[in-house]
Image (cartoon, rainbow, N blue to C red; front, side, top):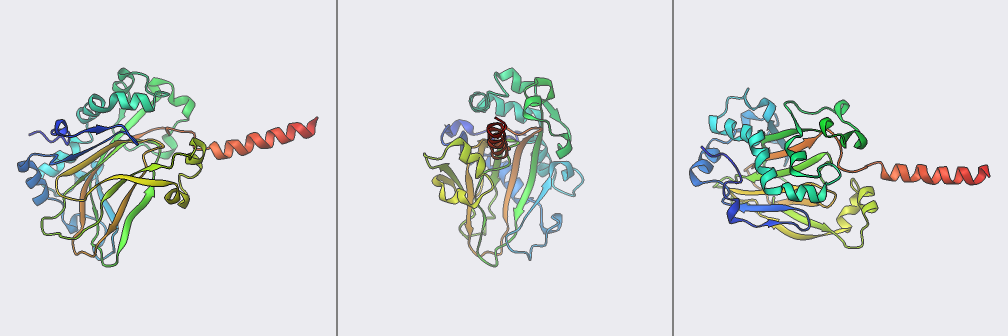
Length: 287
């Protein structure tokens, strides 16, 4: 069986702005989608209590084989954490990755030859930007999970405007809205920085509430059955999840990501700038 979320990508448009992404409606054939939807993990498969309001939980790829789950769910999660799926990503998005992250990947072979880590990359295994330019030092962990946000008893957004961690090369969400769930919200909004925001200010404000005042919406993918969004992560990959209506149903989705063993940008820019300024002042007074 073809488990790939790209099986119907020919029916969708790959967008390059404001960052490379594709939205695929009816991503899977009906037979497979119905199997995944009908056999999606139940409340007792997750660690979180479904009495909590709008909280997220995941069954990650490293734990999926140990769960008492439907075989198609297990195969689906494992496929989207496999080299075969990564090869599909390179096929459809390799040129875009090279264009954005050419500092690390200067041709298709540099993507194809990256070391695939079989285990999650720990913080103490991360390497510096300088080390990451050595091709045989780069690693990627192909992440995949069955995920939920618990029911909504009090209105709240899942997550406001933000960037994902900048050690993430790509990300994706595949929605499996329950057929009886008529609530609205929980949509993914694609955003873009205001044109006057400089690269330096983007770096400074990554974890700041100022982001919400420095970006505007471009498009969105509604939380609905059999819809998939995939994107290449970068300093421009701003997005948010809209407020959910009150509902007794969980928000169901599969999550995929490629996590590198290094950041894609120098996140110490602000600190380094201060150090440079302090050094200049020090040298002035020395003379």
